[in-house]
Image (cartoon, rainbow, N blue to C red; front, top):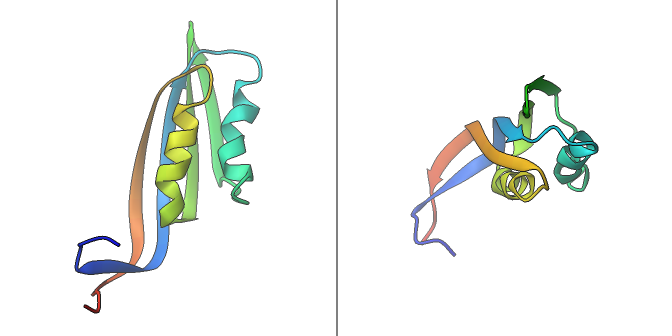
Length: 99
């Protein structure tokens, strides 16, 4: 258990993942696997190739906040991925945890 005296209520996040990768065959379905295995469907998925690199943006308007770091980790472990960044906005309330 965390030592933090605060906890989130309404554990959802609006998230946009940005993936930079090598443009390899089979990359795009591999990037969807971290979502599929958690029964999540991205709201948008956009991929652009520029020379020998590819940028993929994956967005979800509402995703369980506790899954964000898991998905980031899985995306980063995907073969061909060079980097993963994400922006998230937690939706919910913060309240003091009972001692």
